[in-house]
Amino acid sequence: MKDGSSFYKTIATAPVRCCVLFGLMLLPSLLFAQEKGKVEVVKDPKVDSLVQDYVVGDKGKNIAPASSDGYRIQIFSGSDRQAAYDAQAKLKAKYPDLATYLSYRAPNFKVRVGDYRSRLEAEKVMQDLKPLFSGLFITQEKINLPKLDTE
Image (tube, rainbow, N blue to C red; front, side, top):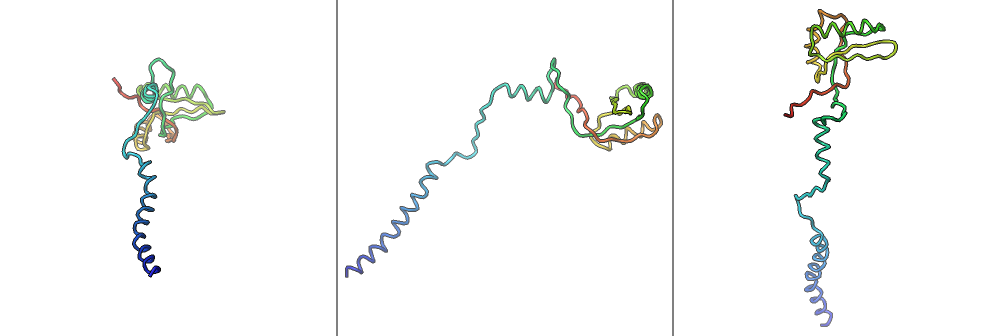
């Protein structure tokens, strides 16, 4: 009879042992649980001013304008510097608001026009420039982004 009673004691205490074991396994997760959805940001207040200067541009400091990938229209390419200046002046006389960029990579000077975010914008302006210049084409390069109205 001793064997039978120990068998029943084992069966009766098994659920208790399982609960204790399960509780011990969950205890670390309950003790070290984190609060969900709460983030604390610790930063120097100067970070906000640096971000503002980068996005808007700091008055009085020499910061390069923000740039992005975009398109320009090439109106001249050749080895004659004066011809490049003449092409630039011809464009400025007709369209004073368009930005022009003169570059030199030996042996050629190149005059490119505009800062267009999409190829479609560049194609529209290129149609207007066709009567003035021959051999126009659109190039993909880094462009200057327009200035933001912050005031």
